[in-house]
Amino acid sequence: MSEAETQAPRGVRLIITLVGRRNAGKSSFINAITGQNVAIVSEHAGTTTDPVAKPYELLPLGPVTFYDTAGLDDVGELGALRVAATKKVLWRTDIAVVVAEAAGLGEAERDIIAAIRRLEIPFLVVFNKIDQGPPSEADLAWCREQGIPAVPVSAATGEGATAAKEAIIALAPAEALHEPVLAGDLFGEGDTVVCVVPIDLAAPKGRLILPQVQVLREILDGDAVAVTVKERELEAALAGLRQPPALVITDSQVILKVSGDVPEHVPLTTFSTLFARFKGDLPTLAAGAAAIDRLRDGDTVLMAEACSHHAQADDIGRVKIPRWISQYTGKDLTFEMYSGHDFPEDLERFALVVHCGSCMLTRMEMLRRIKECTRRGVPVTNYGVAISKVQGVLDRVLRPVLR
Ligand code: SF4
Image 1 (cartoon, rainbow, N blue to C red):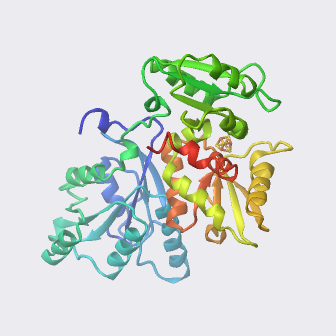
Image 2 (image 1 turned 180 degrees about the vertical axis):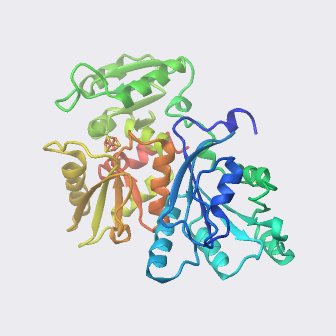
């Protein structure tokens, strides 16, 4: 691993969730690998009730949040609530650590391993308390057969803690280790890139919006030539170029006019498509847009916004996109708006999630939200991709980006 690969980009905070029985030593395991007393450790089984979040710097990975969850073997009504809370955290988890006592992998551990696998969460098994006895050969052999990393640890003495930390770091998703590229890979030095920026009533006075500024900056950083026009001047600008541009990037709201003006052989995409790739998993968001074609009468679509803001009269999430999707499908659909850093409890009742552009979220946060939808079996797309879909230009705007 190069130095660059071991540095988590700023704003990335991996969620590492510990699961296991009561008193398997999850809290003391966190303490052992962090060298800090970050969770309540008690001699009494099941001290941890709701998942406890603890931020920590796990070098060389960077900032992480550990979730210390309730015991899997918790019984009774409260126990069921605690186990349900653990499940909720798993939906958002980047790496899971199954903590087993030296006593081994029983039904509770194998059940949770099966659940973690269904959710496609990278995980390892830690056999804790080896100071009281080693893990059984049968359990170690089973982990080997299943391809599961297994690390014997004594949280009490610290033995194996470094190996466990290294095993966790090795499971970190690639997106936590690499800064994504916004547009810089789509053109070369000396190329011309045309940006189409409508200046309408919705445009802020006296400035460009952040996505436009960021793209322009990448064009300049790549020693390419940026030509910025409004949609009305596009045809003339294209006619004035000696060679066709390497790329045209437009605001989604004028994509129909722009796709008519830009010859088919010139690569064309939208700022939203670039940001969908930059901030999330574009292939999954594109697959989610295909679910628009499968919507049926009576379906409910969730319009998910990561933060609350003042809604305008012709709000994109509340009014425009629901209207366009309804017109495109011709179906009788219900749209519900939800703002916040989580999803509704009953996410599974939605036929589709259409997520906002996630400008206030880090890439990891957005990827986690996309993963949660996938884990819960609900297709997810975002505003920009959905707009291109209902305007019939999705294939064209994805072509330069999904090469
Ligand atoms: S697009 Fe940005 S400002 Fe709007 S709801 Fe999403 S994160 Fe918040």
